[in-house]
Image 1 (spheres, protein in one colour):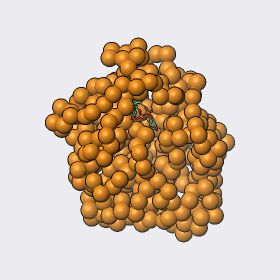
Image 2: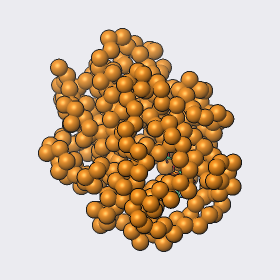
Image 3: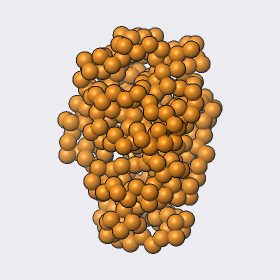
Length: 341
Ligand code: WQD
């Protein structure tokens, strides 16, 4: 039985947690990563957790020949999970063409490889940003793409469309796009977690840096939104629940005879405000966070959270960990890895 899974971006935040989940579920991950947004140390964390050091190829998915040189010599690949992409919403506004080149070209190379080497299953790392600023909540997969305010989200929407057309033209593959909501937290051992480059863009890694004294004060971008406490609402999901969703998606694709293309929301279905996340972090970790309200951040949407029925019914997947667990695990990771800036 084919059990090898190519994981592009496998040393990244979500990628590394998924590699651990693959190993724990009897798969053999083959990691591909260019180390642009990750560190070689991550493979040691994976080894400490699982006792296995998966094979690693340090190449760039944008360079087709590099990808083919690796893939053509590997037998028994049942699927590709494609994480490799740039993912900062606000950075994509300043570096738009780099985001389109990196995120779309790497996906096209993955598709070409899957087609040429008959790799049947593709699981793609998409994002709830494809919904834009949704008028109704919770968002469901059959909603049309929204008005997307940034190249990151647009690149994810374009990749979904490319995958759908590839499935239609080839009809030899099972293709799944997973729309992530807001991934947070870390593996409960504190041996792998989020490694933001420089000053974190995302909320929780910024909070943990303030809590550890590396950053002075958290800016809360806007408290004048039309929400219960004036701050934005998000669907924060534990990164290990997100990793488990990839296993469920792969198992589902592997078990199906007929080929198809499908999309799933991967969230908790529970809206949490920015302020609630801060106060819950303070409570569960018994730490005071210094913060101030400032003006809104360009490109932010007011509220988004997932309808999660489709993944529950079709993939038999639901999130299991609550927000308190995510916030404890995030702090545990920060404490155990305070050597990272
Ligand atoms: C969340 C909220 C900010 C930082 C992310 C990922 C994106 C996608 C969707 C997967 C917003 C507020 C933040 C800070 C703040 N995930 N905030 N002060 O923008 O929802 O997007 O999830 O594909 O890749 O980036 O996440 O954590 O940046 O912001 O007040 O210092 O926290 O305004 O309301 P976002 P975020």
